[in-house]
Image (cartoon, rainbow, N blue to C red; front, side):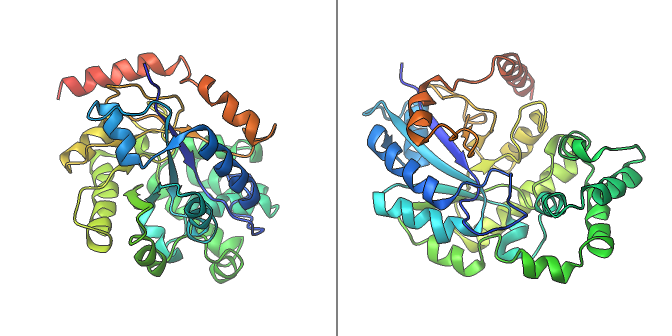
Length: 323
């Protein structure tokens, strides 16, 4: 039986941006080598075509691979799409819609900036004060994901911009992190490009109320329908670890909005019949590419889903069957 692989990328930025450092960014030169290698080894198709094979509608080819990007980074337009266009490679970019044009600061980028700027202790102090528990600087990433609170996170972000790095300084230093409205207008006419949604602000969905979950998805959907096209888009779940970052409530909310295809990010291939509400993706970062792009490509066939997720997938299926 064929396995269908979907790769997940974030930024491919060659600039020295502290917001992106050690956060999944891949240097453009490395991405170019990887794109060339993948093109030689796989039949790279659009996400829509690959999903057709997963659902059983088509099945002409076996070594199918699709490429996705999360967040809507500026480098998708400036670096990734030009490279992929040279090879005729299609891709789908999932947008954090409130961050388009850098209108809203993405909290995770701001936290990362502070840590890479040497303000990790100051950031830990703000987070500790807001959450009411001591948080060590070395635990900031895991703590803020596992204990995410939307309102507390909003206040921490505001205090960072008041007490650690002024908003104007951050906006100038870390400009053009996300696609602009003009970028989207130009890219949506590219036959090799498609867009999907990735919520409004990239929260940890499992830590939200039902109403907040619906608002995050519906607000992103409204942007898509008004700015891109009137079809129902595909949806990528922020962070994407089942029963760690999201649960069945996110799937239920998306289905209420008529969204069919929903993407996780905890790894693994897809086989025919993979549920459309739980399409697996393999997240790619420079750590995985440490032994060279060729080594990574050879290992792709062995990058199966972690065993811990099989009972979680079963739990999700049972929960949804009760709706």
